[in-house]
Length: 149
Image 1 (cartoon, rainbow, N blue to C red):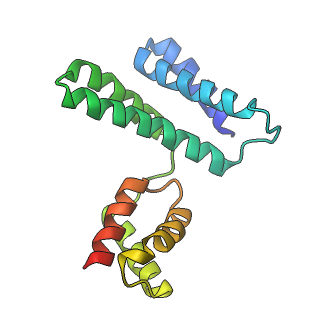
Image 2: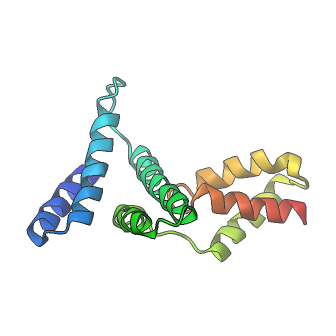
C-alpha cells in the first residue's frame, strides 16, 4: 500500500474519531505529497523520497516546538509535538543511539577516517545507509564524538 493510500485510510479513521490533531497532521502529509508530486518533475515519488519528505515534516514540527518551548509557550509546543508523533508513525522504526554508533564506528573503520576532516565522507555514507532510520542531527553528533576522540 502506498504512503498516500495509508494516509487517506488514516484520515478516514481520524475523521470518524474526531481526532483533530491527527487529521491536521495527515492533511499536512497529504498536502506535502501532492505538492511534491506536482512540482513539475513528472516522476513518481520513490519510497526514499517519501521518507525524506516525512522526515522533513517531523523536523519542522520538532524545531517549531523547540522554539515555542524556548519562548515559554508550552501551549503552542504541545500540538507541534503531537503532530510530529502522528507523522512519525509513517516512518520506518528509528534506531537507538547504540545501533547508530555501531554503524558509525564500522564506517569510520572501513573508510580509515581519523579526523574531523573526514566527517563529510563518514556522514555521507552513514546517512545513506541509515536513511529514514535516524535523524541527521543524531548521526552528526555521534560522528563528531567518534572523530574528535
